[in-house]
Amino acid sequence: MTTDLAWPIALTIGVDGVMSGATGAYDKLLGDLDGVYLNDGAFAEAVAAQGHDRLAYHVDEHRYGSDPGALIVGTSTLLPGRVGDEFAMTRGHLHARADRAELYHCLSGRGVMLMDTVDGRSQAVPMTPGVAVHVPGHWVHRTVNVGDEPFVTLFCYAADAGQDYDLISDAGGMSQLVVTDGADGWITRPNPRHTGYGSAA
Amino acid sequence: MTTDLAWPIALTIGVDGVMSGATGAYDKLLGDLDGVYLNDGAFAEAVAAQGHDRLAYHVDEHRYGSDPGALIVGTSTLLPGRVGDEFAMTRGHLHARADRAELYHCLSGRGVMLMDTVDGRSQAVPMTPGVAVHVPGHWVHRTVNVGDEPFVTLFCYAADAGQDYDLISDAGGMSQLVVTDGADGWITRPNPRHTGYGSAA
Image 1 (cartoon, rainbow over the protein chains, first blue to last red):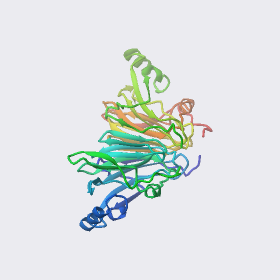
Image 2 (cartoon, chains in turn green, orange):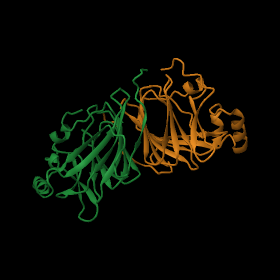
Image 3 (cartoon, helix red, strand yellow):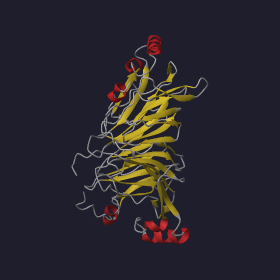
Image 4 (tube, rainbow over the protein chains, first blue to last red):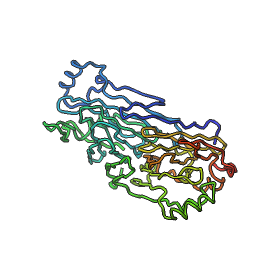
């Protein structure tokens, strides 16, 4: 107990992902995602056509501090699109403290939570408004927008979790791709570049 | 990394608080809330009129386990009503590990997150759909239904947090009451029974 306790506040969270009261935010631009998609030619074409600085996704977040029991609460807004036959996605991560779980609750749009374990399991869960995915510890995860509108999720995880992004790029990407089924839907397909996660945690 | 990792699942969360995939649930009945409200006579009358077993609130929750980084995700559905001039409320708690924060995100209804610190601060935050309250560690908290419909929140907190319920009853209740303003709204009023939280964490 100290006198510098955080004072609780309300966060107003729109289904468009706009969060009042955020203490931090960042944008990820299309050009930042070099190497994330399998088809390098299609990626280069997309950057040429849409620009390096075209927004790919935006994150708002709120944290009080980094005390052991602190949480980070926020919204992720992932714009729609495709690069080749792959749907727009976030970089994805494993938590640096790999046992930290994370909640994602879909507020709008249509997406997929794509998850891998480092020992070779994979899972893809469709998300629409009202669907939450409780990502257990030890699962690499990313969101994918398989719809035509922004895909917005509310997330909550331990402030001490951290993110390991290199694990995915070092593995040649996640084990599965989320691609168009040629009609209005999506399917997963093994990623031919994926080398396994090696001896990672 | 073990072979008994949890397998991620989707949770379907209705604005009515119904959650598919829950691993646990409990009901709190009106008669269980003896001593929670200031007006003992009004409480006895409410139990006589509505029955001991009238549902007061229902909680659905999902957890994978109790590993250090695990979260508990769930919904709380608090029925409307009054006991005397106090609005229907949950028992409230401080986390047994007091530094554990908690997210509450309003899905439907109209409520208040009522919060105290053990050193005498108090805060009441109105909640309507789309409003989240990120309760920092070290804040005693309860929800109050100030509307006419069920007040439903999605919550997320660390699985190792635990709940200390006795702290509030030992203090004669929280420091403030949430009571009718005589019209369609609510106000807070100091709880004359509240003795302070003593030397609690």
